[in-house]
Image 1 (tube, helix red, strand yellow):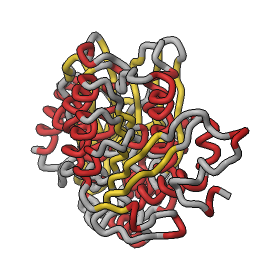
Image 2 (cartoon, one colour):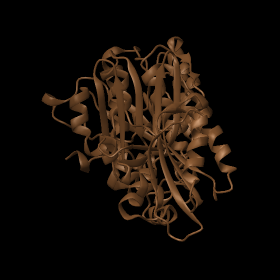
Image 3 (cartoon, helix red, strand yellow):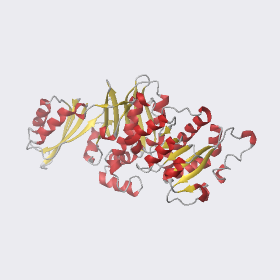
Image 4 (spheres, helix red, strand yellow):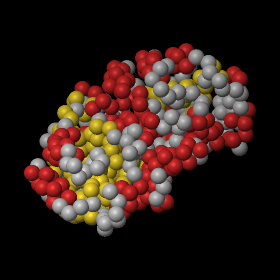
Length: 456
C-alpha cells in the first residue's frame, strides 16, 4: 500500500497499465509543524488517489525545517530534510513550493524567491497575504505563476475557491464570516454555560484551542487578516489590515450574552464586508445576530462564511476552521490544482484573486462614523424614577429611536442595568449621544453597546 512506501516512489511503482502518464510534479515544503505534518500525511496516504486525479505523481522532494528530525513512518528520511527555506525555494528541481512557516520572514522572501524562479506557491499565511499580498500577487503575475491560499481563510472551508470560481459570475453585496475558532468557542461556552470570558479563555488555553498569548485571536486581528482576503475576492478591491475597524471579544460580559438571548439574539465575532456604490464597509467586532439565523448555530471552533449575492441570493459555507487535517486538506487541494495547471496548461496561470492584478482597485473604505445599523445598549444607572426618560431624551436628540427597553425590577442596589435596543442609527450619532449620557449623574459606568445585524 502507498502508506508503506517512501513518498518519492509511492506512486511510480504502480502497474504500467494504470501508471500516470506525465512526469512527477515536484514539491518543496517549507515548515513541517502541525499543518505541514498533516500535508505530508495526505501526500503519503492519498498518493495513489491524487496521482489518478492528476495523471501524474506528486513527489515530495525536500522539506525545509530547522528542527525537524527524520520520521520514517511518514517517509521523512534524512535525505529529504534541509534547513534553509530560501535555498529550497530557489532549487531548480522544485515545481511547487508549499509555505507553512508562518510569520512574515523568512516566509515573505521565500515566496517571492520561489515565484521569481518559476515556481507556483501554496500558502496558509493569512497575515502575510493581508499585509504583503499585493506585492506577492503582482510578482506571481509578472512571472506567470500562481498562488494557492485556500487554507488562509476558514481552514478546510473552501471559501476562496468558491468566491473566485463557483460564484465568479455573480455580483456580491456582503460577506459575513465567523472565521476565528477560538473566539467562537469562547462565545459559545459563555452562551451555553453562562461562564465568564476569563474562565472560558483559560479552559481554551488548557485544551489547546487558544494560544498562550491569545491577543491575535481575541482582539480580532486574525479575523481582520482573513477579512482582507474575503473583501478582495468578493469585491475586487485591495484592502490592508489597518483599514479594517477591529474590535475583539475581551469586554463581552455574561450579562450581555444573557440579554442577547432574551432579545432573541446570539453574540458572534463577525468579520463583515459590504459594498454599496463603490464604498466598502470592512469591520470586525462582536455582533448580535438573530437566533433564528444559520450563523447563530455555528458553535465552538467551527467557522462559517455567509455570502449575499445578487443572482444566487444567500449561501453559507461551513466547516472546521483550524486543526491539522482540515487545514492540510485545503493545502493539498491547492497543490493538486496548481499541479493540474502545470500538467495540462504549461505556463498558463489563473488569476489567484479572481481578477487580473491591474483590475483590482484600492478600496474606498466607509468610515465607521457613517456605518448604519441597530444597536444593543446597556447602562448601569441609579435606581430612581426618571432615569429611563433622561437617557431616551438624549438619544432622541441625536435622532436615535428605541425599538425595545428592558428595565430590571428594583433590587435595592445602587445601580441597575437598563437595556435598550435601537432602530437603525448612524454610528457617529450614537457615539455623540453616549458621550452626553455618560455625563449624567445617574449613569454609574461607561455605557456598553454592541452592534446588531438583523437583516443578514
